[in-house]
Image (cartoon, rainbow, N blue to C red):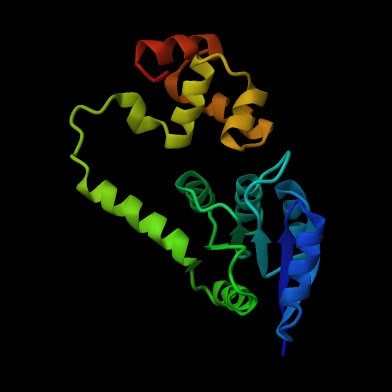
Length: 219
C-alpha cells in the first residue's frame, strides 16, 4: 500500500520531530520533509511533493498564511492541514482565506491527529471542536447582522485584510510594523499595498493615507 506523504512545518524543532514520531506510528503515513517556516515549507513542497502539509500558523519571517497561499498556487493538489495552538477568529480566518483544507489544534490526541491527516488527504475538510465553534459563531453573527445600505465603495472593492493594511498605513505604520501586526511576511505587505494602490487608483502610500483618513478607514 502506498503511504501518504506528509511535510511538517513548525518553527520549533522539538515539535516538528515529535509530530513526525506521532505520525510515523501509523504504517500508512510517511514524513518526507520538515520545515521551520512557510517559505521553507513551500520550497520543500516543490521538491518532495507531499500529499499533505501540516502547517503551523504563527512562525517568524514567513508565517503559515504565506506558506498556504504559495503552496496552493504552485501545488494546488497538495492538501494543507493547519496544526496550531491558536483558535482565535483572526488566525482561523487567515488560514481559511489562504486555502487551508483543515484546521486542528495541537492539544488534539495523537490518534485524532493521524485520522485528520487521512481525512484531509481523502478530500474531507477537518476542523477541531474549538475551531468549529468559532466558525459557527461567526456565521451566526453574520446572518443576524443588519444588512448595510449605501456601503462605501472602498469596502466593496477591498478585502478585509486590505482594509486592515490601509488602516495601519493611515496610522503611520511602515511595512515591517504592518507585517508584525498582521502576522504577514513583509513581502506580502508590499504586494498588498501595491494592489490596494492599483484598485484605488492612487500613486503612493501618502495618497493612500490621506484617502484613508478622508473616508474614515483609519479608525
